[in-house]
Image (cartoon, rainbow, N blue to C red; front, side, top):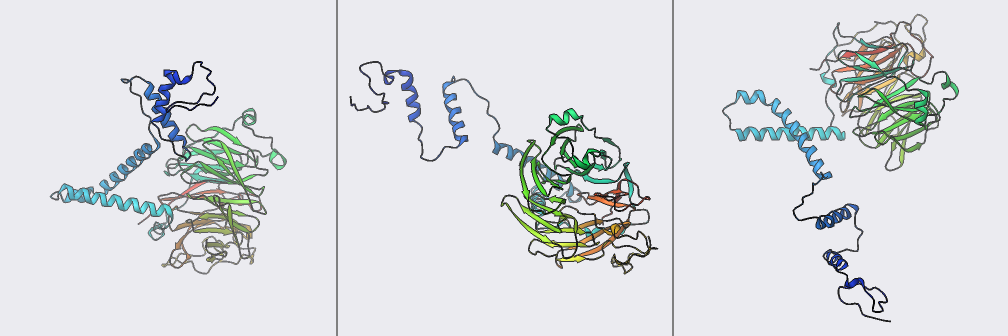
Amino acid sequence: MKYKSKKGSVPTGKSKGKFSINQDPFFDDELKKRRKIDYDDDDIESADSEDYENEVQGGRSDAGEEEEEEETADEKRKRVATAYLEKIREIARKEKEEEEEEEDGREEGEKEGERDSLVAKILQQEQLEESGRVRRVIASRIQKPEAGDEFRVLVKHRQSVTAVALSDDDLKGFSASKDGSILHWDVDSGKGVKYLWPSDEVLKSHGAKDPKGRATKHSKHVLALAVSSDGRYLASGGLDRHIHLWDTRTQEHIQAFPGHLGPVSCLTFRQGTSELFSGSFDRTVKIWNAEDRAYINTLFGHQSEVLTIDCLRKERVMTVGRDRSMQLWKVPEESRLVFRAPASSLECCCFISNDEFLSGSDDGSVELWSVMRKKPVFIVKNAHSLLAGPNNFDQKDNGHIPNGHLENSDHNPESYNSSSAYSWVSSVCVCRGSDLTASGAGNGAVRLWAIESETKDIRPLYDLPLVGFVNSLAFANSGRFLIAGVGQEPRLGRWGRLPAARNGVSVHPLKLS
């Protein structure tokens, strides 16, 4: 039986004179509500669907009943931005406080205008520094160390320190050693606590597997540390092939991430996020999320063990491997750039900016790289070459080092530390967003360098005497001090030993003009 549907009615098929839903007032009300909403052909986003449901539910509720509205994402961003702006204004107010006290006769509106312009300059400068387009000038402000300025042992370890890390506020520090200990300490006082390893039952409940091979006897041998930007998470890795996640507030173990087939040699957090990158002797780089406790992806490309890893705010990861290559991974694009050292094996690397980076090699050289070239832009040869004596040279007035070094191949039995292993550049670090960098080896000194933006070269500043293998370095974000992880042995082996070295973390103050 054919029929024509009335305007506003819904076809119901064969009615046969029986009751139809068109006659039900309940469905009639629902149809009237639906007619008021215009639907487009485009897909409706989930947020719009939720708004519609809330609108319908609100229409069904009583007229006098009011519902509480939750904070939206835009409102949250506005609140955070407003709080940050107030913080910057407070900083600008303090900077102008003395000037305003001297000029009390000026109008209040004029003072407020100057403060707002100062706030705008501060925000613009921070944005340029974050993007890497502008560097903080710190190297030229470093004053020559005096006789009393030297490295001071801050934290002691029983065996060689393999990694150190600093929180973004420069107040908390972390160090790991070959003895399996992880210490959390205060930068000012040096007092700290030791992280306690969980039991085997707890580790197995997290998915951890039994160690294999050389890791059976040294399963707690820690090789790498990394702390998140918010200071909440600490990640550690070592010979047990797992990545361990710790809560820095309670010093408790949170999660163990299995997945690597070899020792975890390096770790780094992406700045401003909980995204974690790990490098291993299994030649892979893995991506994790500390907040969600989840594995994300694996990057393949190295032909040998991955030794060092670094990352800035962008999703770009820099790695160095024993295959004599340094690789820049562009994670979103799923591509990579391969940089090869001229005639040496690279040992360590770090970002200077998104387009420039630094590396150290086993022939005692420090290289400056640019993303635009596959070869080093500038090479400092014999940057940590062997010294004929502990005090055989002095700094000149212009800051340059005189020629008093021995070539790495010239091994004099009477020389100080006469082995090429002591001149390997085992660690490099950059004061974030600045032109100040440092490198460490086992030749008895940590060297400070200035990176020249215009000439694209590296200029030596000062040598900071320190006995032992400098396995890890970390600058304070303010540039006020330098942290060094020192040991009697190198981080990844035992091909050299300095009995006079003290295993621990040393700090050296830096005076800025």
